[in-house]
Length: 289
Figure 1: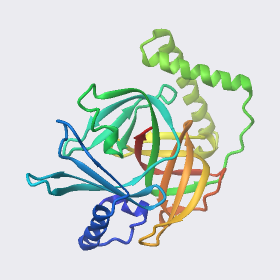
Figure 2 (figure 1 turned 90 degrees about the vertical axis):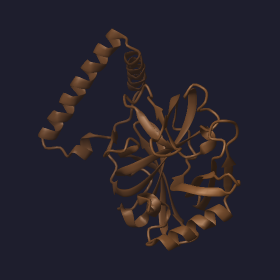
Figure 3 (figure 1 turned 30 degrees about the vertical axis):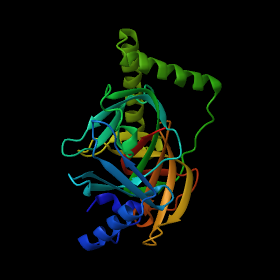
């Protein structure tokens, strides 16, 4: 079974029979469905059904020579309401099945962001073209099965001058990514001083969570899994319509990007409130606006 089923309210699903019943519900009464057209992926289909706002199960498969739908794989999904970033998105196919990740490198993050493509229609008609999409708005969401709520940090108000410095730093990161030698040197020096400052504060006795305001780092061996720390800007308690399990849906501001996160209440330590922080591991998903 899929590890992240519990994130959308199916944590008590224990056997194959119960799973098959769930998949049959999705295939018999989907909220959305999509069939590919044309030469590429001409026989593929996708059916999805929500069991709480924006979150549920997606089933994908092929068709046989008689036109009958043949199930191949499924995954739990959560669709975001917010545009998180805009940039060039490359399409990366999974080795073992007809499934794709989106790969994007925002200039202001200094890291390659990899996310599971939740909607087949976002890539089915594009994979035969260039394999990438320029300046595409992306809505990032995530499922989590391990998270905790932390108290907020006491932050000084950011002045207009400091905002301009952050904007300028983002432009230098972008120039460095394009190979500008001067910008690459400036970025390296900036990161060196930042590392020294953080190290001195930690060795001086401060807790790392009081020093680091936000973080977005790869986690484990899967390319679309991350460990994050960010501010909760919205939180809502929901219940799975079928199982009745309690689910928290959080909007977290992490490294300047809004990410909507779905997590089972049993997997979340602490009480989420706006202004507090979320720390956890996530499976990053996305859809193109």
